[in-house]
Image (cartoon, rainbow, N blue to C red; front, side):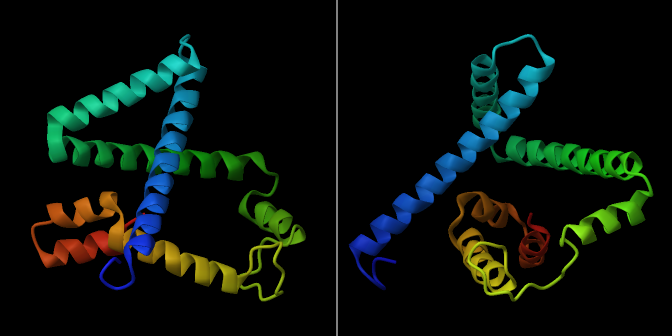
Length: 166
């Protein structure tokens, strides 16, 4: 950014990116600590400290291989959790999937596109514009995404990682 624009634009962009990453990491540690503190008789702050320390330790000792295998296990756990939530949600509503669809339809949540022009709601143009910037930020300068690209052995693997990125 500095050669294209100036030092100020590069500095602000870097600062904003660091703020986004710090907030993301804080939210991830907070959510994990909150979940763990519900199941173990340990104070919340200690759960966060243990998770943060454990993550730093396996990242330092295991290197990229440790991080990748942790990502694989997290992916599997998240997929299982999503399936469990979906099954529980569908079975908890009378009528199953059609009952859920009816309830969502009455609440106005079954519309695929929304061009209302409202600033208060989620509209299709807002999602497309905001989503474009988020994807550009993520695919181009996010250290977490770039490390995925750098650990791939071939260009085909990089493309696959880009398509399957979540």
